[in-house]
Image (cartoon, rainbow, N blue to C red; front, side, top):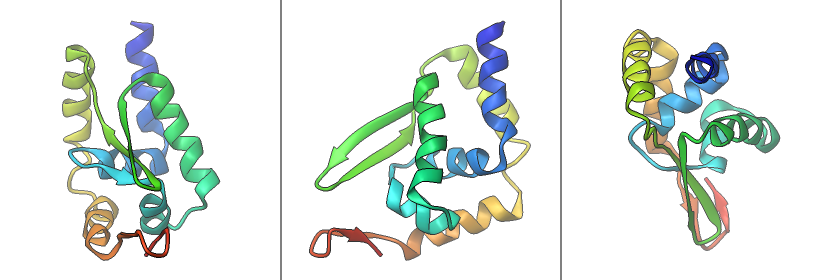
Length: 114
């Protein structure tokens, strides 16, 4: 039960909810998250750290960047996620974040996100 309560607490922060939304079904690097959310690297990393600590993120190194994606392996937690997240899917800010994805990319030449 404690694990489920801790899992639900991950949804209690608006920024973390936005990050979860962006990482659901796709891999994104931290610098793209910074751009989309308008946050500093430190702020994004703080939220990523909480999600990693809970073990629901997949991490993959590509070139200069670390990409993260949502990876909920526990069946019960996945069911909770699907149920809770379905209540947020139509939120305007979450839809806007997804639209911003097409406008950001990582530049290997410049070693930065644009």
